[in-house]
Length: 194
View 1 (cartoon, rainbow, N blue to C red):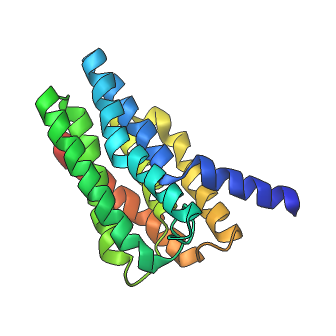
View 2: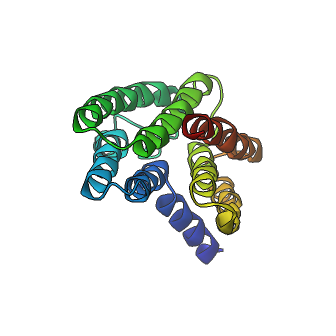
């Protein structure tokens, strides 16, 4: 039982939204085939959308101002998401000034759509951000690289299991996030890259 809980905690930390989205933004920068500009653009997008907000959340959680670094209290989610959106907008301005690749913008905007979904739902229901971000990321990777990555579809159930096993979410909250990710994030990316 102890090992199972440790595995669930490991999955929750490794596949947390800031890590997943940061990885994906950097992959989008590399995949854009614009050399250093693409890599720099992906890193800047990750910095403003994920890393700076995540560091702020960790500091606030350590000071007792937030429930934890996963923002488990749904009442605290909307202010965190709004601050993250503000940081992301600043990143978009910098990326526009740099002439960042369209693919980085498309991935960034698809996850902004996921963030807006979370902002709309979070005041009423604690849908899983982990499941939403990871399932959306899997959809984005499959859209970018093709069906050879269908094996990644095994990851959302794994993160869902970990969130339920740790008692952070119900099965319904995880299922809703797993469905919302591809529907919101994947659909927006598809529309932006057609």
